[in-house]
Amino acid sequence: MHVLIIEDEIHAARRLESLIYEVSPDAIIAGTVDAVKSSVKWLNTHPTPDLIFMDIQLGDGLSFEIFEMIDVKSPVIFTTAYDEYALKAFKVNSIDYILKPVDKEELQLAVKKFKTLTHDRQESGHKISDNISKVVELLSRKYKERFVIKVGEHLRTIEVKDIHYFFSADKATFCHTHDNRNHVLDFTLDQLEEMVDPSLYFRINRKYLVSTKAIKDIISYTNSRLKLILEGAKDEDCIVARERVQDFRNWLDR
Image 1 (cartoon, rainbow, N blue to C red):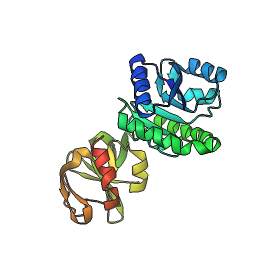
Image 2: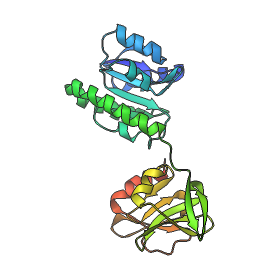
Image 3: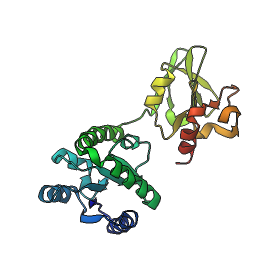
Image 4: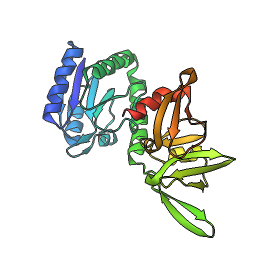
């Protein structure tokens, strides 16, 4: 297995190289480069590596630029400090990612995943391009910062940072703010889920989209579910749906 490492931090590159040898003794480090331009040059002048470990932030730009300049035919495993919510599109087929600092077990799983996909290199290349586009969109996306609401005959704005949770009731959608007030919004919960930063708000069920700021207590509930006690909420439906419990735990533990 010939491996190319694209990493601009020398100590991180050396540590990654050492871990690669530990989890895959048959690996051969074909090269180590530290920038977008040098990566493009290396890939244009050397045989295609079996696998590339690629940091996202390089000294002369984002590594996504490499894909715009040349056709990268190798499967890629990204090593990055970016939040996993922005990188969820990587978790498919030939693409994987490891959050820094690189953990040996995570690296081992990523390499194992690569080895199960090497039988279909052509398909892998197409999916790399598709997912790079998705991730660039996610990373450049800007989330809602404020909402305009109507209060009597007046309009006022509410900062998203002041909203503890969103909820639906009586065929309407509301936001509950830090001053313990509810305000009607002209959006559905499905729309709001796309508008707000998923690292700050989590959809626990069909009725609630909550922030950690709102959670006063978390209680084990029937059928492997969780019940939340939210600031200012009297509703008994603040239950994390069973199929969302693990994702909710991961969201809390990020």
